[in-house]
Every structure is written in structure tokens, then in C-alpha cells.
Length: 227
Image (cartoon, rainbow, N blue to C red):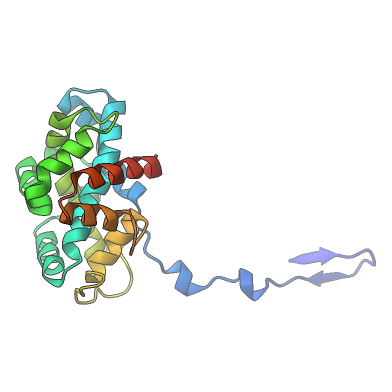
């Protein structure tokens, strides 16, 4: 830019290298928990489950990271990552490609129930109980109905990232690895805001160890961090 001096002579100030854009930083994936949350039809969920929007929102904000954490725990192993990527191939990213929240009528709740069963396995009731006992989530029955609604939305969103959606990583997806679960592990880590050692990993560890109390503590921390 041109800057005038007291002598009447103007000179140009060029931006320092530190202020010039660095492509490596700008190329980071734009996936985020808030973007995923924006696809969830809070008001429609509230109406369907017979609760107010505040309760529905609180329950969704608790359940979404828990689903993501369970998926991350599965993707931490090569076989689990491969199975998850295979499942994503069967879910149409078009569900979350419209403007704003999805239409709840388009959500396959029966499919969602199967997803929840596969993600949490024998720990499903532990997860539901932990979420249901969290203040403001509406109790176990509401959570049990909510998770199958959210699961197809989450998988459609993840499928969008892997198939080149607007917010997908620019680099080709690598083969699944034990440490990161490949591209899907990176996406889940980014969504949970922590990657290695993040909140998703903590949830997955609690589930894997059948630690109901620990899971409850993790969920409490999640709610504090996401609000």
C-alpha cells in the first residue's frame, strides 16, 4: 500500500513474508463439528420426540460427539477403518448436501438403529445410560430414539468428506493404518477437535474398556467443551 511521509514523498509498504498466505496452512480440511451440527434438524427432532428445542439441542450436542467417538474407536484398527469406509460407500452424501438441515423424513431410522448397534456393540446401553443421565438430555428413552436419527446423518456427512464434498480433504485418501485409521481417522479426529489424544479417542477408550463411569465423566467433559 502507498503511505505518505511528512516530506511529501510516498513509498510502498510490501507485506512481510509472515503475512503472505501459506498454501500448506490454507489447504487444511474445513470439516468441523459445527458444520455437522448445522445439518441436524433440531426443530424437527424436537417435534418428533415430543420435547422442546432446548432439550433436543442439548441431547444432540451430547450424542453427536459420542457417535463420532464410537466411530473413531472403530476406525483406530485397520479392519475397523476398512469396514467403516465400506459402510460409507452405502450411504448417499446427498442427504447432507442441501442448504441447511436435512429433512428428517429422509432419514432412515431403521438403518440408523443398525449403525448404532454396530458402533457401540455391547456397550450401547452403557452409552445410552451415560447420555441419558446427563443434565438436559431428556433421559434414556429420548437418547435411545435420538441416536438412530443422528447416525445416518453422521455417516452421510462422513461419506461427503471421503467422496470429495465441499469440505473434503484435498489429498487422496490413504490406506487405513493402525495408528490413524487412514483418511477417515483424520476426518473424525478433525471433527472431534483433537486427533490423537482428543475427546473422541477418550470416548473410544472408555467404551473399549467397558468403563461406564469413565464414559460418564468423558461425556460431562464433552458437554462442557462443546457449549
